[in-house]
Each structure stands twice: as structure tokens, then as C-alpha cells.
Length: 306
Length: 75
Image (cartoon, rainbow over all chains, first blue to last red; front, side, top):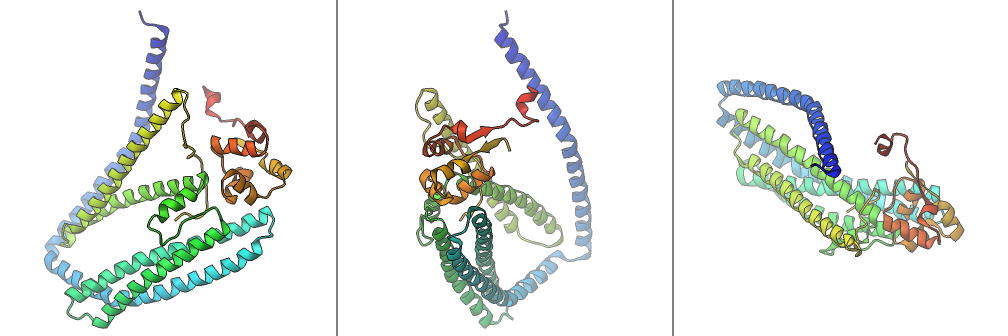
């Protein structure tokens, strides 16, 4: 005969199954509409692509576009790199000087006034830091454009290639230096923080010196970055696949996007598994009456994360 | 916000500022500020540390307020 516990477990399981079915049905309708619309869009784009194939010679078009775009970027990028360099580092120097001067005055502020000041200080330094990081990536790309131009475009001016190379070197040097100064500024205001940007283990030391709220903020931001990057990978895969109908691009862009997508997904899954196992072990220890150890990674936060 | 707290009053009794309180419990000044404003709910470990420094129990400093739409009310 069925015991009361078994009966309750069976009832709970059935309730959960019904709830799951209802949730799937509700979300499924929206999902179905999105899928149908995506298919229709793909159909239209595919049709337009096939029309383009009849009108243009895709090989010639892609060669023409490829060479012209590369030459254009190879000539324009060194100038943009120089403008970006002057603007971003000029802004960063102003922000650093202003923050340092204000910090001295903030020492005697009351709690609420200090909070308002800190919010401004934090926002300014975050903008400066993000601009520097963006410029470094932009100038890496700029140098690649110059390099490709120098290799494959006959009309490329050698002086522009040298300017691109110089800008890349200067951006890396000034970028690391500025990041170091921003970190030092944050450490000045938050004495508990430790780590130097010139240290190979900087990220590890920095996170270790962050408290639970700051760590939580870093993990949340990292998850958001994972989500956005995953969506961007899907979008890029679609763009490159559809683009192949119009321009003869090689398989390289799709391969690179797929590789990044795979690394992202696998790293996330493996880390989840590791953390899940760690949690289980802690749970077992707790069940045996032992301490769960240092597991204080909860809640939210805001401040600078590097 | 379901978690209310009296940290500011307890900190005033100790006569320490947010920076000093942060140093005592091993957090940043910003974390203390956010806890006081109710923008951040500390972990059990941090709540216990704060209680110990304030010579009070966790319940004296932190109060849990059931929300009207709380899940538990519907069960």
C-alpha cells in the first residue's frame, strides 16, 4: 500500500509537471512566433541574396570591396588612432588630476556628502578606465588594418603604417600606465584594496582584496558580459552566413565566431560544474556538523572592478 | 526592501565612521554605506561580524520584514 509520504511526493511531482507544462505552453507561443518570423526573415534575405548572385559577380565584388575597404581603413585608421590617443589620454589625465584634488577635500565630508562625492568619483574613473580599454582594443584593430594594407594594397603609404605601429606601441605603454594610475587612485580612496597592474597576478590579488559586495558585483557584471557575448555570437554567425550570399567571404569569420562561442559556452559549463561540485562538498560537510568554510559570496554591490 | 537595519544607530553608539566600521568588519566603506541605506543585504557571515563588533545580536541590528506579495503567504 502507498504510504502518506509517497502519496505526497507523487502529488507534488504531478503539480510540478502541470506547472512546467503550463510555463512551456505560455513561453512556447512567443517562442513559436519569434521562430516563424526568423524563418520568414531568413527566407526574404536568402531570396534577395539569390537575386544579388544573378546581378553581381560575387567574386569580383568581394575582391573589389575587400581591397578598397582594407586600403580605406589602412589609410584612415592611423589618423583615428592618433586622434583617439590624444583625446582619451588627455581626458584621463584631467580626470585623474581632478579626482586627486577632490579626494583631499573629501576627507572631512559627512556620510551623505561623501557618498555623493564617491559616486561622482567612481563614475568618472570608470568612464576614463573604459575609454582607455576601448582605445587599446580599437588601436589593436587599427594596427591590423595598417598591417593588412601594407601587405596587400599597392597604394598603401608606408608612413601611415609606421604611424599606426607607433600609435599601437604608445597606446599600450600609456594604457598600462594610465590603468596603473587609476588603480592607485582607487587604492588611495579604498586603502583595503591591494595589487599592482604591473603584477602578473593583479586580477587575483585585486579580487581577493574586494569584499563580498564588490565580488558579487564583479561576478554579476561577468555574467552579463557572458550573456551579451553569447547573443552577439549568434547575431554574427547569422550576419556572416547571410553575407556569404552576397559577398564571397571566406569561412574564417564564421570559424572564428564559432570558436569564441564554443570557448565561452564550454568555459561557462565547466566552471558551473566545478562550482556545483564545490557547493555539494560544502553541503556534505555542513550536514556532518562541520564548518561550511569561506562561502560568503552573496548579494549585490557597486564600485570599481578591474 | 524586506531587510531593514539599525546599523547607523549602532555605529553612532560605537562612535566610529563608516570607514572605521568597514575596517573593523573587513569591508569597504561603500559596503557599510550601502548596508545602512538598505541597498545591500549582507551575507550571514558579515551580519554576524557586524553584530559582534556592535555587541548586539543580529536580530537587534537587522530586521526582516515580510513583503505583502511574499511567496510564503501564498503557500
